[in-house]
Amino acid sequence: MAAPVLSPQLFTAEFFRNPYPALEWLRENSPVHEFAFPVDDVPTWIITRFADVHAALGDNRFSTSGAKWANDRARGAGMVFASGTVVEKIVTVLDPPDHTRIRKLAMGAFTPRRIEQWRATVERIVNDAIDQLAAQDEPDLMTFASAVPAGALGSLLGFQLDRFNDMLHAIDRAFTTAPELQDDRTRAFEEIGEYGRELIEARRKDPADDLTSLFIQARDGEDRLSEEELLSMLAVMIMAGLDTTRGVLGSASLGLMEHPDQIALLNERPELLPGAVEEFLRYEGALATGLLRFAAEDLEVSGVAIPKGSPVLLSLLSANRDPAQFTDPDRIDITRTGVRHVGLGHGLHNCLGAALARMEVGTGISTLFRRFPNMRLTVPRDEVEWAPTWLIRSPLRLPVDLGAPA
Amino acid sequence: MTAKPRATLSVDQETCRGTGLCQALAPRLFRLDPYGEAEVLRAELTEEEDVTQADAVMSTCPTESVILKLLA
Image (tube, rainbow over all chains, first blue to last red; front, side, top):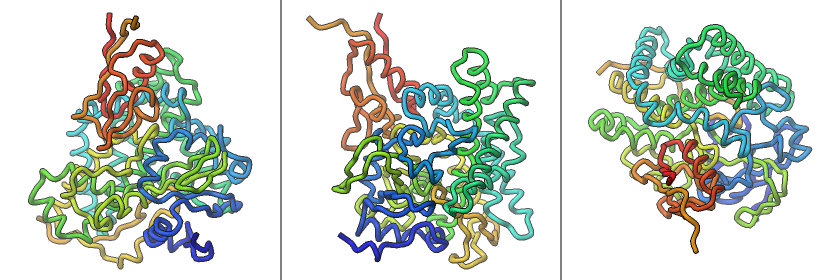
């Protein structure tokens, strides 16, 4: 048993800058690791090996429903998702049967077949976002990475998401770990809910052929969604559809700039794109962990007991860099085949928007680097700022020199 | 005597991406094979409860890979 004193500090500035050494230490020394959550020192477990993370994601006894299963200490520390706010019942934190009833309503809009119909729209959005990037005096790649999901999600929902930057900021604020920021976390969830409410009101007055109207019909017509669930549906689209794709576009771009041979390879062999997208999702997905799980009963993982009600973090970043699962895991290799990663989660709550995410990342990255194959970062790698949250892995700014166009 | 099947159940392994939703939602009906792709544990469903479960999986599978055919 490793001495706890040697264990790395989680969720420090250093961890957010580069979590991989700490995660590697955990995989090797304490793969099911108890630590004190920064808020109120709540005993929390972080699981880091691929096999354990994959198994826990597929095991419903690790429930995302903190409202149902969290122990009192975790509740007191505000670890239950959006507790007490208007968006506390998003589908991601519901167990079946509510999970299933609500997921059904949205799933039809996000299947690969349905998403394929948005390809031309996504291509236009990507090209516009690249034009805007190219027009900047000091280009910040993250403006591109934010504009693509905002445009794509807006198209599906039927709105210009004018306030997407506010929403991205709210999401970053909602998952901080500083104890003094509890009120700000609650406020951030309320702001996301407020925006959802505005979009719903606008569409109730002026229905259209879009996803927002479809959800409103489900509420107003057949009464399958409560008003609270309707609002949560809009909120989950905003929360899950913006920062995630932003993160992958940013991380994949940064990773490619550090693996220029892979840029050349992708440009020479565009047929590698689908596999490359999987590799980007593996190499550095947008969620550092899944949403918090709570033990629905006393559990044991690889010999470590986790008492009922305990909060558990499943480290997707770590699982996807586990050398027991992936050869040379810290390298981007777009020719990997048969990669099964957990970048989009796994199990009951696996990413509903996966097909859209794959299209945005594939179109975004391939178009960007075809046009600017010589792009490079203009600040030292160590100075890249990352979202300071336990949940999200995303650069906040990536100052770049676009280089000579192709 | 065996009860009359109400439905047949299968997985399209061409489109399945092994998200594991089926196994998590209906472990009586699905599991992941050693390659991580879904397979059915029952190809013929005789109980109404199973049909309901299979229908829930069919309408939440992210790749539309679950094929449920109701029999007359």
